[in-house]
Length: 323
Image (tube, rainbow, N blue to C red; front, side, top):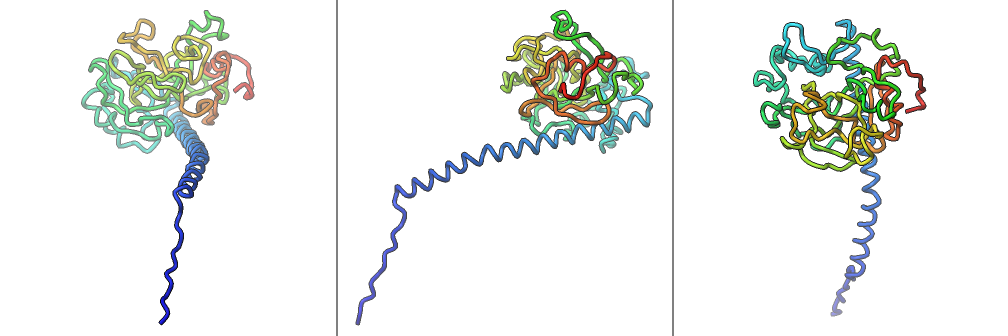
């Protein structure tokens, strides 16, 4: 009777296994940047869609009320200021939140906290880190209890930029805290005037792509909550290229705002926000214009040109190629 010979199948040697692992590691290393680029491209498109929806809500609000939503005080309430985001809640399918918001109370009042603590995804850029971060009221030692937004309007141009020779003139933006702006109040043209842009990452402090500090009562960018008027950019101030010094020639993505350093009201900004134009997209920020269009504005833009986009009545001449 013949004995069957047992065949021994050779396995991987240790060297072969290490080579396979190395090849897999190289492939992953090559694929990861591509995956990240695809994810960021999707986030950028989502951010643009958010702004388009906000723009549509503005135009629908103007049709219904004859003016754009601003950060004005309701006539019956002299001590409370309400941010535009609250007025347009019904126009991006948040009517239940608007119905439960008491316009006679502040955004941080316990009566309104069930509303203002709610995250609203359309007001958040998906590229912005830590979407769960919160803002707080200065009278409550900045304890975080209200949800944030990554979008803001700009009230106007910092006069210090004119003194430094970095802009042609100062002027008002579309978002106002003193006036219910109408389309007729934008003689520069809706398609030529920036309405809302990114001012992301607040109240944490970011400079040139790096988080400098998480927000504390002593060190923070003032603003951040979607419901808080101080989340607006009080002045386009710009900064140095490293974001450490304001004002300065860098208009976009050098800093998301000035550190209040425990000063409130702030000696320069008062009770207004200290935020600046800042996003987490590579190379620039998304911006909504008055006509409802959304453009990507390159961070290399000259602050003089960017200031012309911000003012609604400056009368400056420029072309779309400038940004």
